[in-house]
Length: 246
Image (tube, rainbow, N blue to C red):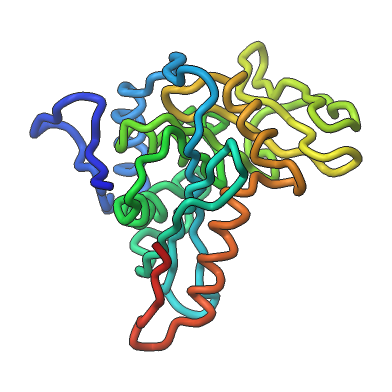
């Protein structure tokens, strides 16, 4: 699958697709500019069938990283295909700017897929972000694909603890603004934090998260992407010969 930014044509005045900002201030400016392209409308027609999960793993002692993308058939819960891509960190860790570390290599992983997913779920945040433009928003705007984020911990906002049963949820809020949902995907297990990214709404993101979390707390697509990226990183040699699963 060839990933092409699909929202609209770009001009010379717009930030590049895989921008490598020279400073935190420049990165925040790019976020603000890209945020103008964000579409929070409902674009998924019915229940999607092909859902991709993406994740990135980091080597603790070097700048090496591996991204993985996994496509799940939501109707059968079967893995359709996957791809892993090695790389190196190109931007320092700054809270709220994770996308600049991960989006370029995630784009490469998505580009290796033969099937075009109908929606992408990210291990991270969408609009539940200080500038309302987290990783899922960034990836969605640059690909044109519907996206949302599922995080293990909250980043911004306040919430009441949801009920203890699978499917119970409470609103994640910043004042009167709803940023996402605190969703119980398994009974008596800690909840996850769901927020929309691009071209999806919160009801759709919640339903897909539950459909992908039939057995575990985290959606199977990102669980599988996490496993594959970690395994590839573990198996990698200094020469960066990494097996790619397609």
